Image 1: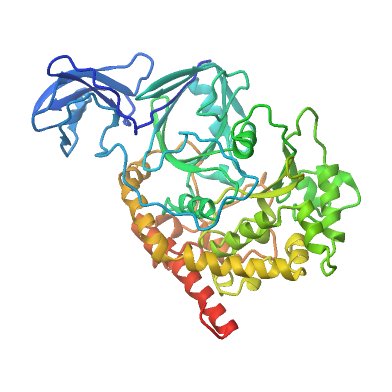
Image 2: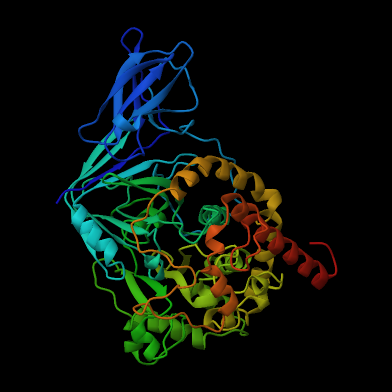
Length: 570
């Protein structure tokens, strides 16, 4: 069985390969099905040839344009479709452009850092995520195996393929062995599903230094921007995490749509994040908090970092070992010891801060908790004891806290938006339930630091004055792709509004879940919001306020609370 995995990076323009007045034109088709393509130069069409290795890439030579050029899709009896705009003339060969998109690199405003990166971070430079670009990933393989994977979406089926190609305007790389599988848990029940991609270890050159990647379907987010803005905010406050960008995805002859693209917290991500890609870095163990499984639920175990004297409780599925320590096989004893430390750690002794800091990078946790509260993370540590990692960083010899999976933020989720936006951080659902937060807040130094972070991040970052232009730029960049995505047929199961569960998926039960909000999240109305309304609001949905709507509520209520609490401006 064979798969081709191709990424078209769009930022770098190839050197001119002109011969006289001739240059090379290259365009990616997102259409699927059998067709030919041409470039229309000064109203004269010139045929392009389909790449034998890259079926969605069409190239050919034609004269330099005196006025402009465009691309056309020739679909036989279905007629010819020409781009409704003219591209600017160029004297050099084009990069791999995309049919129907007027830009190759979109100018985006930046979200500037407000805090320095955590000391443990030493991230390798990589072109995996280029701001303002949307590459195209092309996957080809045995359609029967892929259909079986989509049909049996609740089963952990990985489809193995034998060949991977990376194509960009400046580079073509070939890889052997890739696996694709469905990602997530309840998200597998949606029509548009997410995927995990894994390049095998023996690949000589991983994809820009990474071999485990995620394709996020954005299935619960009609705004398409919650995650990218969430990761912008995390990067601004110097948290260790994946980076994030968009990709277009084509599977065999079928366009799948617009996806989020990010790295998985597995090798070689660890060495890339903490050791500048050093392959000799001696990594520590990486634990994942997964909320719970059916087995752990029966034992009353969730991944909230409670201490259990029986080590078998840690291996029931609420926690997972995502990466082993260097040169050994990890187990759950270090995690058990860390939860015991949380239970017994001092809070009022003169050496309490020092003892805590020797076991945990407390700043990493406090920055993440400040963001969980401000961005309204309805599926994180506070609300659900979910979607986080603990990494034992071997240089500092202590744990560092990592957040993950930011799909259910900024009002999207099953936790009451009202309870998340009171402005008082201690009102946030789950804040007093989690052992680590509870214990740290008994240390005056850490409590004061969390409060300082909440005010600083709100004033300098999480407000519309700071984020509005970035949001508007990203929206303009993806508008055409959102329309394309929304018109496509889906590979997953037919989603039935109001039915958000499956007998094989553990039911979500938590004191932080609001029944009405959960019902609204999966209602037909939430999934019929327009792109514009989902971004700006008002939406009229308690589980799906507009992104800007949520940011306005949260920032204003937070600042009002601190003004009223302190009796002075902040």
